[in-house]
Image (cartoon, rainbow, N blue to C red; front, side, top):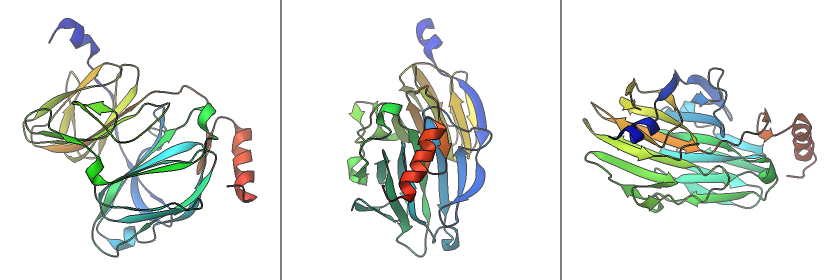
Length: 283
């Protein structure tokens, strides 16, 4: 490794663990971003991990609820979830699929399990929208598993590229101002890989199976650990015993954030308007 490259390597600047939470009609989950220890990581507002084979933990789902001013990204690892919204959209999320929803100026949708037993597992990530895009028209991108490219950039390394570019492929998500990178990595025992990232973008690693190392110098990350990375042009990921993890990065917006419940705007006045618009049926 050259000295120049060494200076551009990212390292871990903070680690933490998610906290138990519930959302929707009582769905049990782990809140990784959006908790007191890590309220946000511009442009990321929230990261929830959900996973249970107990129907009581997920069967009530997420009945109709509104959103304005940001995007939600649901990535399913296991299970079946159906979404419907007040714009007439409907789709089925299955294992390996992604739903990228731009709430924009306002949408009311539901996400309900289409199973009464078995494992339901995945992530939901919230990305902020810049002020100029908060009142854009809402839209969905439903992405089937077969549309997500899988690459093997090094021995024992598999990556599903959801958004951004890696190892010669581009993820299927069409994203805007935050220019996100989102990939799901599987590392076999003893495997390692270096991933190029846009230098000024904020980034994090979340290990959801096994244990991994991230950064240079390497820092060990146990299952359930999020690691916030320093600026830099690349990050090294490795695992002695095998791991699965997501690596996510995005361009910070550096704008004021006013958020309450399902609405994320720039000012308190805009928040009040969002509530008024929803209550008057303008969504």
